[in-house]
Image (cartoon, rainbow, N blue to C red; front, side, top):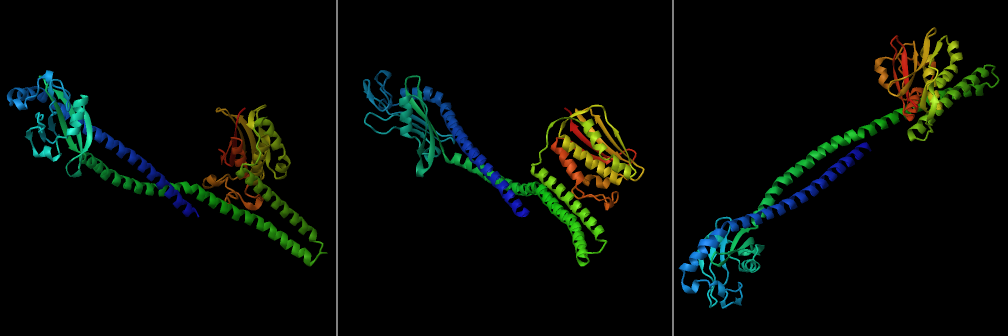
Length: 451
């Protein structure tokens, strides 16, 4: 089940990463294509503008003065708009200086009055390969007096970007400079970008898959640990319940075979003792279940930690005296804290029960309470028993865990008291830690927020 969830998590990571890459790729390609198209237009306009001085000056002037009369432009007073009849004579066709960034150029003079086409002054194969000049954009640029940039159909159906720049010579002559470049240049640039982005994207997905497997393994580790703890908890709880149930069953069978046996009284006492043990275990299991589900009511109100510590210790004086253990209390007159006094008393009771059980006869158990410097108060329980081996400290609060080498099962207990105590401390925004005292023996410290 966990492996299936892990695979789903990995596929989810990779899928989300793929969508992000796709979105970024589409935006990047669209932006790059737009920028490349804009740069192409800027380049074409710059190349056309670069010839403006030459066209506006010497070329138009030399042509006006040095060509045959039929080729000369009408005087300014007789010139109308391009492509129209106006003034004192017919308007010439546009004088077109056509050039492309790859050094191809065409210069086209205006047509004559009899409607024949304009004269090509200079032509190169590179220019003609783009289909220059383009009359429609040239006329629109001449009529509007503004640069016109359009995409037109070139030779063999190739799309060509054309920039048409109108220019007026110093003697009034009109010219339109055209610069052209195939749209294939932009497509090739976008294609080159895709050739880079696609392998990078696939490599990113591969790395995302590897990273997803790693992250899903780490993400599933707490769930795996929790499941292992649950299995161990169920196994331990079953074992703890099975032992007293087996004893009760055996005693009941003995009494059934000989109901009048005078020793049945002792058997009944043993049964009651085992039933009490099971009742305590079930009560602890119920508390843990409520804590895990967040359904155990834990108050948060001010109370005096000194009073709770002294009262809880007083309940264990008789038991400590019966087992030959000296019980001492060292608390200030008043120590206000915030939390649940009932849960705090239950924590201290679990710590005192643990300390008295594992302190040898003639030993000491000391309960202290003091104020700390970080706006917290502390209640501690220290004993003079064998202490806790360092290798057992990390697991001392695990459920059903007992440090067998140092603390025998002979004293009883369910192995849940310390687990419940720590959970109750956390529920009050407190903390319960375990260690060893300087002079030997175990030391448990409960920290609670001060009021």
